[in-house]
Image: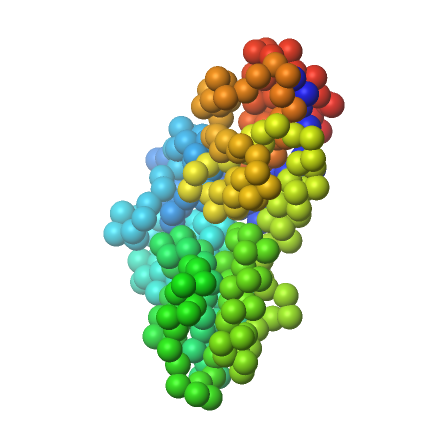
Length: 296
C-alpha cells in the first residue's frame, strides 16, 4: 500500500484559536479550591475526539444556558452564537470567553449590516448547524436559509426587494458557487461579496484532494460526521469517482475496504488533530505494510 498525505490538512486557524483558549482556561482554573468548572456552549469544535478529551478533563458542554449556574465561566464555541445567547449570559453574570472564528464573526457583522439597511438575507447553509443558527439569530425576521438549488427556485420576493446573500463558511466552494449563480440569475439586484465567505482553509483542503486524487484508489478523511467541512471533503472525493471513508479515529477505519495494492489519499478535516492522522497512518502500516512520507 502507498499512502499519499494531503497538504494542507487538519487544524485551521479558527480551530487552533478555540482549542488554545479552552486549554488556557483549564490552566487558569487548575488547582482552584473549590474546583472551578468550565462550561462550553455547544461543542468547542465539531470533533468527537477533542470534545471527549476535554470532557475527561472536566469541561462541561451544554446546549442551553439553563444548564450553567449563575456566575460560572462559559466559553462560546468556534461556531459563534446568536445575540440573545450573549444577553442571557450577561443576565446570568457569566464570565465569558469568545472563541468564535473570525470568519464566522465577519458573517455575523455582515448579517447585522444588511438587516440594518433593510435587506432580506439569503443564507446558504445547513439548517441546524451551530454556525447557521448563530447567524440567523442576528436578524431572524430577515434571514432565509436555503440548502440547495430547489429551495432557491422556491424563493419568492416582490420585484425590487432589497436582497443580499451570505454563505456558511464550511461549504464546498464549487457547489456553493452554483447556488450563488442561481441566486444572481433569479434576483439580479442581490448584493453579496465578490467572493463568498467560505473559509480559505476549507477551500484549500478541498483543492488538495482534487489535485492529489490522480492515481489514488480511495480517500480516507479523518474527521467527525457532524463536521461540515469534513463531510465536504468526502463529497469532493466521491464527486471525482473515488470511494471515500470518513472516520473519527483509527479503530473506526473500515479495514476490509482496503487492499495491500491500494494507493490511499489521506486528509483531515479542519477540526481533526494531527496525532489522529499519524495514528491512522500507523494502523495502515501495521495492516498493509503501507509506505508513506513522514507525517509532518
